[in-house]
Each structure stands twice: as structure tokens, then as C-alpha cells.
Image (cartoon, rainbow, N blue to C red; front, side):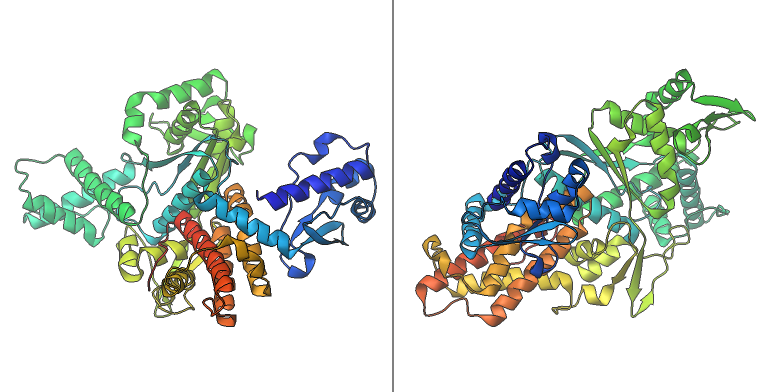
Length: 543
């Protein structure tokens, strides 16, 4: 929170206490200011009148009218107005805005960071694609969202752990092993039958060829094919993620989970708490008692576990490790899974509100105006690697988070690789590169902070006010787990700079004015670079 906002909140509290001495101190807990979307409603807005309405049993407009009579304008407020249904809007003096620019400069690279997280332990698990095929664009979106959120949460003072859950056992891995065996035997000239539920992608044939070239010799077991295929694909996944700028602190194996005995311990915990029962030879979890739409089988009549069972044990481990917040990013096919996992966590005695599950909606990839079909098992899909190779890492990451996490995303390949201002990532990177070019052209004119009062143009005030909002944008992005909020802010900031550049010369014959403007654009450049870095996008010096 910037100093001017802290000062305004203090002014609001003081006015409220004078106008209504009877209100309890607790009413002010968590009091924040908002930035109005429309300029006509001022620079900051308070909803305190609405918050006090129930406490005072008065209309918000009457409370707001009483409050502003006690607001001290001091040296930062130009005007205060009340707008329906009771907002108190503050208009800030230009000299106060300039003073804020000086504060921003002093904070340097730390500007925008906060102690919001208070070093709380957070685990964010994302991608977690089964090692049965290359990463698709859907996985790419989850990777971009998860990694950006991890960076932003860390910037806000959280102790963040990135985790990838490897589903390296079960029916799908068995089908993969059988698929590889069939392709390998074909290459060896032996008769084989391809499994009905097998994976038909060309990548399986490529793995089979590499296996043949390695000359393994001797009879090979089904387990060998299964493990070989999973290891090969997992290696390719790790390489793709590294090239995408995504790194994980923990790679968690489901196979190791099964061997640890923790799955059985989780079942035993639920049994002791009397949340399990037997029916038709199977063991059921009473998930309906915790908000699920029906009870769920966790052990089938043949004694094998359902997909849910190891996931219950996995989440039990997450809580046992002391994470104060757990974030999962899943694909849309897991939407119905949310309630049953939260039910299990609650049944095991954990706070389900500490578990946030984000559903990253599907991506429709467009090439030449036509959607591209994607199906891992049929082998008709576009991989994350192909998208990176075609549009570049920066554009891929940026486009994957252009829409809200739970909104469907249309990804236009032609736009993503266009070297024009119509391309939103190019638009922001160009603003950063353009500032670098101006600074170089100015022959590194020194930054003189004594002449900032010369920044009196409307576009200059708009730029500084946008910079002032950066810390709030970061906290809102972190609180809502929504990286598209930061992305939109960067687009707006770049737009304000381009508008300013088109209206005024930065480097002029007026040395003091030039020095002041260089200070301003230096600060814009730093914030653009900071925001782009949080999204995992490169801040280019030249384009």
C-alpha cells in the first residue's frame, strides 16, 4: 500500500470517529480504498458509508454526507465528493501525485511487493499431466497460470512451493505401456495387436524406435514397456516446462505414494471417524455429509482403489506438511471432482477453505481462422512445444493468461506472432523497448528528482496515477488468484505511455524538463519490467 493511500485511510478513520464516536474500532478492520474505473469518480474511493450503514442504522448517503464534513483535506486532497449509493471519492492534488512518484522511485525494485502473505506456507500444484503424451495447449495454459500465480504470491510475501503430481500408475499408464509394446513389436517384425484403449500418437512410435535403437535385448516385460514409456514422456514434459520458464520444487510420484502406505492410512482415518460404510462389496465414503451430491466409492468390490482414493491420501499429506493454503489448478474435466475432494479434506478434520481449486477452462487454438482439434489418445493434437516454436515463449505465456482462469480461451496463432501493436504482448514489450531507446537516445540524461514538479501535463498525471495503483493491482491479483488482472493493468499502462509519447517529446531543449520526463519513463519502464517478470514474459530492451 502506498503512502498516499495509508494517509487517506487514516483521514477516513479520523473523520468517522469524529462524526460517529459511538462506532466500535473493529468496524475499521480491513478498510481499504478502491480505484474508480471511471476518472470522473476521482482517484480513490471509500465504501465506509456502506460498511457503517448496518451498524448505525442510517442510509449510506446520509453517513457519507456527515463524514465529509469532518474530512481534513490537508495537502493531498483537492476535492471530496459523495456519489450514490454512498461512495466517498477523493481527488488528489498534483503535487501529492508527484510526491508519490518520489516514493515509488525510492522503493526501486521492491515497488509493488507486499507483506500480504506474512510468510505463510502455500503449495500450488499445477499441470500434473499424466505422462502418457506430450504437453498440450491445455497443459500450457495451466502452466502459465500456475507459474505466474506462484511468482505473484511470492512477490506478496508468501512462502511458495510449486508441485507437480505425477500419475505414474494405473489404467492409463498400463494402456501406454501396451501401446509402446505393440509399436516396438511392429518394428521388430513381430505380430502385435494394438490395444483398444491405446495411445495412437506418433510420439509412441518415436519412443519405440529409440527403444529399438538402444538394443535392449532379451524378453521385455509389460512393466518394462510401461516404465520406459512413462520415463521417456516425463523427460520430454520436464524439458518443455523448463523451456517454457516453469520450474517445480517438488515432483511427487503417485507410485511412491502407493508404496508409502499413506493411502491405507487415509482410509483407516476415515474409517475411525465413521465416514465409511460397506455396500455391494465396495467401501463408500459418506461425502454427501460434507456437501457432495452423492457418496463415493473409494475401494471397489475387487479390492482395488478408485481414482479418488490416492487423491484423498495426497491431500491429507499436503495438510500434514503444514501448508496454510493449498492451491490446485485443474482442467475442466475435473470440475465435478471439487466437492468430493473438499468433502474428504473436511472429513479428515482439515479446513476445506484452505484448499482453493481453480478450473482452467479449455483453449481453442486457431490456425488460419479454423479451430485445431486436440485429442491425446487419437494423436491429433497440437503440443505446447509446437506453440512455443511457432509463436515464441513470451507470446505463448501471455496469450494463455489473457482471459480469466475460468473463462474459455480462444488462442489466435497469427495474432500471437504478429509484430504489430495489435498483438497485446508486442504492445507491452514495445513500450518497454521504446523507453529503453529514448533513454539511450538521451545519452543517459541523468535522473534529476528536483524538477519533478515540471510534470504537469494530464498524460503525465495519468501515468503516475497508474504507477501508484501497481501495488494494489498486485494484491488484488494475488487475492483473486487471477493473473489476467495484472496483464490488463500492464496493457493499460503501456497504452498510457504510448499516448504520452505520441503527445509530447520526452527529450527536449529544456534540460530540467527532459530530466524530469526521463525520471518518469524510467519508473514506467521498471514497473512494466516488474509486471512482465511476474507473468514470466521477457521485458525486451530492443525490438
